[in-house]
Amino acid sequence: MVNVNKLNKRTSVPASLSDQTNLAGAVFRGFIFDGEKVLGITNPDLGDWYKDAQNNYYWGGGLKLVENEFVDDAPVNDGSLITPQVKKKIEQVVNVFETGSISGKYHIIAKHADYDDPVSKTRIVQVTYGRSQTTEFGYLKDLIIDYVNRNGMFASILKPYISRIGKQPSLATDSIFCTALIDAGKVDPMMKQCQDELFDKKYFKVAEQWFKKNGFSLPLSFLVIYDSEIHSGSILPFLRNRFPTVVPAKGGLEKEWVTNYVNVRHEWLRNHSSQILRNTIYRTNCFKQQIAANNWKLDQPVITNGISVT
Image (cartoon, rainbow, N blue to C red; front, side):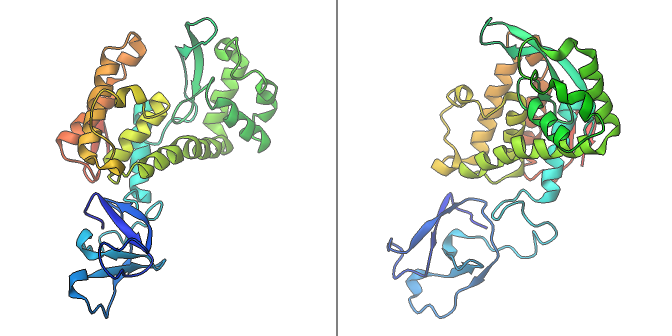
């Protein structure tokens, strides 16, 4: 495991540590790989070196050796602490945030005035739906297109609405549309499969890319990033501008960045002009509790809204 902020990755053991000719990129704190010690290094000034399965070489001075610590769960992607077990836990916490259920309620519809209409400059009511609550003016259309293309049980009812989803007027008052969504989420396994794939592709993978690109490694960091993607659509730039800490990929401290982001997001939600958003500070309160408990690996239970996610 890399235990320095940044470590060079090389195509071979260099002639000296200052040699830049064989650089193949860099990895960051928390990066994990299966490696073997390189034997036969005659220059003691170079220290120990380790080679991974792709024949990349790493200086041992930037590594912490761990044995059999991550055997049970392979990483989602190489170099990540986000194992399938951790991914499931992260999704379960967000499911509780969104629907009050660990497994998520695939049939749940909410109707809130939370869409900022660019024409009228007002907030209008929209449909939000499913396990992690995708929105009518967001990815609901993608979900329904996929569901119809797979001939779901309620495809014939929902297909005529495809051209209307994401356009005004909202379908929040259309009882046929809303009832079909609810029924599909309740009884059709195909709708559940479509939702799982949509939330993974449109939200989890996007959060994962941002997480890795910016040098993060810890599960709690991923939870904070994923929740911001689900709830706010991104890691909000204007909130990042409210604190000086840079991301780990630029030399910042991961825990400091996450703590600062949670704090400014909490204050933004707490003081928001919209009561709907003010009501969601249970999310940031949960993160504050995990930070206080030093639950960065999410190996302790996460309790939110009276539900314990283990």
